[in-house]
Structures are given as structure tokens and as C-alpha cells.
Image 1 (tube, rainbow, N blue to C red):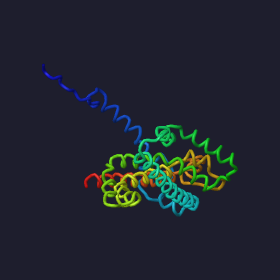
Image 2: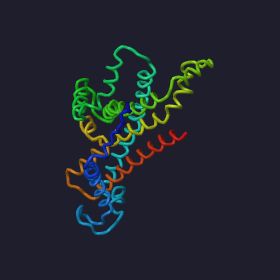
Image 3: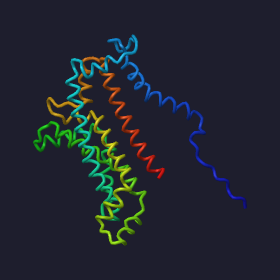
Image 4: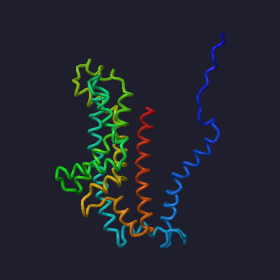
Length: 272
């Protein structure tokens, strides 16, 4: 009896796949390209092109609103670094317990709770966080933004860390303990270095999420506290100016740079 010929599913063979893909890419990235191009516009208008210039980039650092944007950028980067560090640390401990902790009761529930912020609409998370801070009488300010970002970024850091740990066989740790290493030494000297690419990727992802977040930040920030996304939103309400395009382009550049670093880290690890 002739063996049945196996067929491989290839979505690219379906009619219209290429056209739909190009359309989706255009819808996603065309606005970013337009903003980037017009950030170099010499004109005061956001629609009339009058030649290339770095005037609006200089205006971000020396213009009338420069102090506001500098303060907001400082707040954004400090909060993003601290929140990403805390979230990555908690995510690493959670991944260790979930992946290396063996089977235990409520394991599936624990994974669901970790992943819940990814599935719940961000506006719901923002409202719930605001209600929580108000209910315990916690004054809104930089600390509330930091706590909210840390909690929100944990699942984003957890996913690459957990995926990396699942790809590491426990035989390495068992071999270390056979050579009289303690569990702590097996973790810090064997498992942790092997997990480092996933930890770096998790930190970068959490950093980007915190840096770019607007909805949660806008709900939990106090009066007079601004991050870069909320400062941009406040300026846009008064009218879109070319310097906003310059700031947006720089923020986009930071995000692209961080994603590139994450890709290079994972790629260099795979080639070893």
C-alpha cells in the first residue's frame, strides 16, 4: 500500500496573502514613515514641505518647551530603567519557580495570573490601578507610576525569560550538583549565565513597554509629574507642531535600537 503523501501547510500559497500582508505593513508603518520624514521639514507647517532641516530637533533641546521635554524624558528613562529592573528580577524568580519548581498545586492558575495583564485591556488595568491607589490613600506621583509600570511589565519580561529557561536542560544543574555544587551555586554559576540572553531580552522588552506607555501613566501620575508620552499628548492637545514629530521620531529610534539590541543578543547566542 503506497504511503499517503504528506502535504505541508503553507499559508503563502493562498491567493491574496502577499497583497494583504503588504496592505497591513503599509497601514502599520506608513504613518511612522510620514512622521519621520516631516520631522526634518524646515517649514512651520506639518503638511507643507519646504526643504530638509534639523531645526526642529534643535528646538527640542533649545526651544521654549525644551525644559518640559527634558524633564519628561528624564522621568521616562528613570522610571523605565527602574521598572524594567524590578520587573525582570521578579520575572526571573517567577520563571525559576514555574519552570524549575516541578509540579505543584495551582501552577496553571499562577501562570494565568502572570499572563493576565497581557490579555486584559490596558484601560481596565489603568482604572483598576487608579482605584487601588485611591483606596489605600496612596498619593499619586512618580512612585505610583513606577509601581504600576513594574506590575504591568512583569509578564512582558517573563515570556522571553521563561522561554529561554525551558530550552535549557536541567542536566547542567544536575551535573553541577554531582560535582558537589549547592543548589544556589548551580543556579548562580550554571543556570543564570545560560539564561542571560533571555533575561536581557526580557529587560529590553519591559523597558520599551514602560518607556512608551501612556494609558496607565496618564491615570496614575500625579499633578505636575510628566513622562515623555504624556508630555507629547499634552502638547498635541494644543495643536500638532513639527517639534512633536521630532520627539516622536527620536522615541521611535530608541525603541528600534532596543529591539535591535535584543535581536543581536539572541542571534549571537544562537550562533554559539
